[in-house]
Image 1 (cartoon, rainbow, N blue to C red):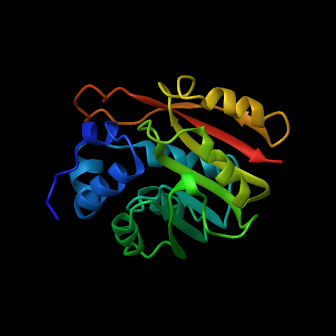
Image 2: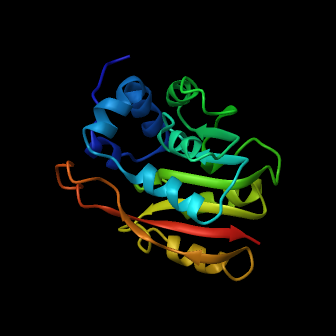
Length: 210
C-alpha cells in the first residue's frame, strides 16, 4: 500500500465508496495528527457537544466514526456505550485502539447497517455528510437502527445542505418520522486552517426520531 499524507482536498474530491475506502485506508495511521491537527479540525467537537446539549445519551452509534475523534469527545463527556461504524476497516482499527468503543461495524451506509432495528438511543455523525459523496438517502438506514425518541446529531456541509437534497429530505421526514429539527451552524475548521476550504461551515441537524 502506498503511503499518503492526509489531504483535505483529496477527501473533498472523493466520488465513490470505493474511492473513500482506498483513500482512508492509506490515511488511517496518520489521520489524527497529519489531518485533524494540521487542519485544526473542530467539527467533531461541535457535533459531540451539540448531541450532549440536546440531551443525547447512549447507547450511541457513531456513524462514519473514522479514527474515533468524535467518539473520544463523546466518551469524555460521559456518553456511552458507543459503537463505531465506518466504511474503512483500517480507520475502525485505529478507532478501536482508543478503547472508547464497545463494537466496530464495517458498513457502507448506502447498503444499510447490519444491526437490529431500534438498537440505539443516539445517532451521531461528524464529517460523513461533509464531503458530498454521501447523500440524504443514507438517513433511512440511520432511522432504522434508532429507537423511538432517539436523539440525532448529524453534521452536514452547509454548501451541500440544499444542493444535495438534505433540506428536502429532512423536511419530508419532519412530516412524521422526526421531530424538533434544529440546524445550528458551526465552522468545520479552526483559526489555524489554511487553503480554500478553511472557512467551510456545517449545519448540525439535531432532531429526534418519532
